[in-house]
Image (cartoon, rainbow, N blue to C red; front, side, top):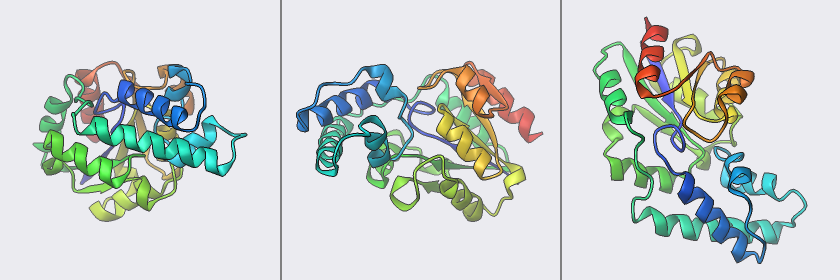
Length: 218
């Protein structure tokens, strides 16, 4: 049995604008200037407190806490409007892989459990995944905990699993867990960075990704 582990933001769903707007609200809540979108994109995938600490290394804890709280308020309000659509081709890829009798799928994401549950419900994704793990119960990416938990839930060895992600944090997390990593070119980090982080290949679209997964699983 093989296991495909998915990142969410920037890989399955297009949440870039929602994340950038939410971070702008978080910064405003702490009376700080808005950060450039490109700078915010660099921390997508990290758990929110770690992401804010990375963006604001010199800020004190109350300031970082205000940014985190403001971000969460904005993100939760936007989430009710379902502003994170699936990328084109994502559903077809999931459906094709779900039809493989020797392959399971899971999720490892830096989202909160509340955010992940809402997204899965909004897009009717629960039937695809045998395991989902998020930032609430594990150290932030690129620590391997989420991937190791997915492996344990599925009963699959690391050699028989692959992590799909759009950030270097996903690819490094995969390597830290002894799992292969495949990158996607439509997310938050550049393909060259994904390759440098250890991605076996970087897919240009979901058709390409489906072929890469099927070749890996063969």
